[in-house]
Picture (tube, rainbow, N blue to C red):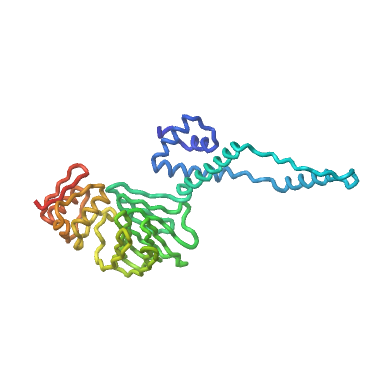
Length: 333
């Protein structure tokens, strides 16, 4: 089916010259994110070559004034008569139909606003993705994450992106000191000028670790908005209620970064490792007792895949790790 969808067919679709079967094929084709991205690129190209209709206001105005000049009422035409305006009322059903159409048009425009205005990068479980932003900044998007950026580049005053999941940022400084802002669904916003940092934003909470430079962390706690200025090496952790904990962390938190897939454990509890496995690989991890969950890992090692990672954890702590499909059971026996 993919070979049947090309630019010529999509342009014909924009001109409303496609058949019901072709429209159905296009709808199925759009289920793939890469195809959706291509669709909006072609839409922008088509719109640039098909400008909207511009009303000829000047000729219309001259025609109207000419009509009024040739149809003026004479003062000697006779006795004045009362002119009763005739008001034509639409049936209630027609008003409802018109209102429904306007509502649907407005709703459609709102739903299409994000795909048209923003581009979304996403990763699957176990996948990392390097992204180069329009300003030259670099992002390493962690597994099971998404980053939304403006489709046509950043504005003139701010550089705003929206993160769901986890990513590491290396932000370039601009000559006009344009700030860079990372927004999350956890009501946590990271504001920077030029720096390197990591952001984690998932259902169980959020954390920000600053590697270089300086950032301002804005977060909501209850009804109040609080601000925190971080220094290199700071790790800010927030729970579901955005209760803040700030500590020093000389090593990066364990995560998949870049292509080397190196993990650094710095007194990392086994429970945190279990969450890492769930977030990055979609595994369901069970630890058989609380004391084992609180044991910590120290050290640095590579893991090319999830099975190597599980084996390394087993050897580091001398514990039993059993995987069956997407279920992992960890025990000390």
